[in-house]
Image 1: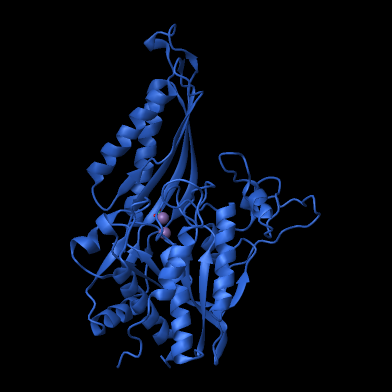
Image 2: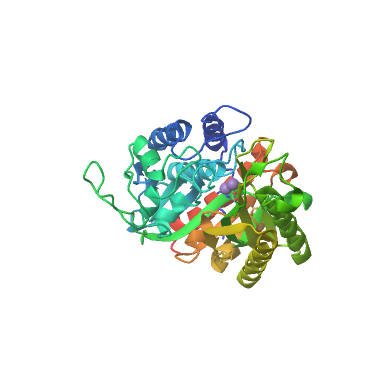
Length: 431
Ligand code: HGY
Ligand code: MN
Ligand code: MN
């Protein structure tokens, strides 16, 4: 089949990326956390630019922004493409934003070049995926796919104690602060909020994203066709000891929550290394209370992020390490509380779309490889609901979640062309 999509101009995408990077809190890299002023301005900016690109724009009650190119034949279903607009703290300018900018540029190119599609195409800027501000992740796609039911808005708060519902209300969004979990109490405005029911009108989801790893660069390949996304377990672990005087408490009489945590984290690393690739385990955040030099730590709270591409191995590793934590706490006379935060199963991508992506790369003479994603992505929430696919482009040095995150304009443009090509096949041809 000839390739009607070629030489897709990257200018619109690169300009969007440049402008999005400016919506950040002060500091190195890009920091754009959910429901913060910089987050709000970025979503507002996208609505204006997408309207200017001829897309029909709307926002849902959690702040996901959509731009639709309505089809001539199929209008009650959409082919969805996009990614998340939020970032980690001091992150890069491509994680998430690239998939959002490229999707809008692809729809614009398709509309200008081929006119109205047969089937509706829709770009989405998901409000949140990282879990950087509130202790939950995939808040944007999770509200689209039914992972969340709205009751979370009163029960999750950021480090300053601002609840998800209050932060939403501060952005004028549908959520209003509620009382506890699962109990959607009437609010001061007397309005109940409704949780956004899972959408049933999405026939396929495609996400373009930077690899955030080193495999494509190491193998000098332009495109990654993702076969599966690793499953993820996230926990908050609370260790209870006894805060006491650092000078007068003999070592044998201590219940030191930080020393106990340190033994647990070394056990975590040792077990993960022994388990071997592709298992990874990380503690990204640890808080010590009271956190003063001359007081034995009475309480420690740390996060766990554990991933594997096989569900059984992930389950076995998690239960094993939590058992080991219980043994350490028991020996030290410490209290242990483990709060599960997230459990996403490994998600296979759609075989038909993977094959179509490989064929597109072949025809366009782009080097590519099939691969598993160690990073979590919105696409994994769509995989159980509709055909889902992901396309990667190289990350320089494999660096991501860092101000040094970088992909060249040529690499970004290659990904854009592959995305545009599969969207053309899905929306413009009688496939
Ligand atoms: O953590 C992840 O895998 C993704 O970048 N949110
Ligand atoms: Mn991402
Ligand atoms: Mn990320």
